[in-house]
Amino acid sequence: MSSEPQVRAVRHAADAVEIDLHVSASLDFFPDHFPRLGILPGVVQIDWALSLGRQHLPVDGAFLGLRSIKFVNPILPGADLTLSVSRPARNELAFAYRAGARTFSSGRALFGLRA
Image (cartoon, rainbow, N blue to C red; front, side, top):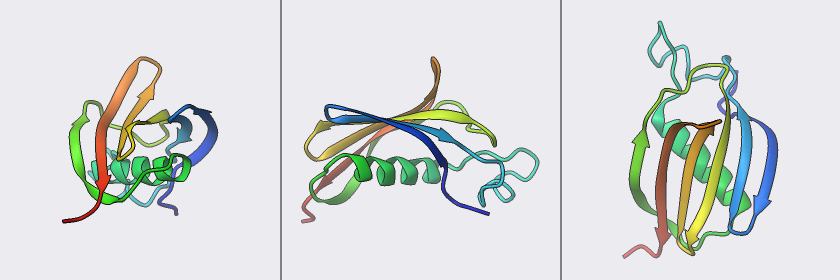
């Protein structure tokens, strides 16, 4: 079993990246997250977005928090998605999971110096 999505393609642009993902039905999260209908937990979606975003885009500072988090549609086992991550500011990552015109989730993460 695994806890990571399958990365199928990566497309870079200025201060942005698009990552095509396959969400395998064999991921560790599905058997325990709603046993009769597995869905990808929101905390996993956020973790993937921040981890993959930071791999491809420079962000200054430590993680400080989240803003505007929206889970609009569930991500089911076997889904093929595009994760879009952009850097609207030096200390911010914005992300969205989509398949075509359908959005599954989105949000913003803030980074900086801890007080």
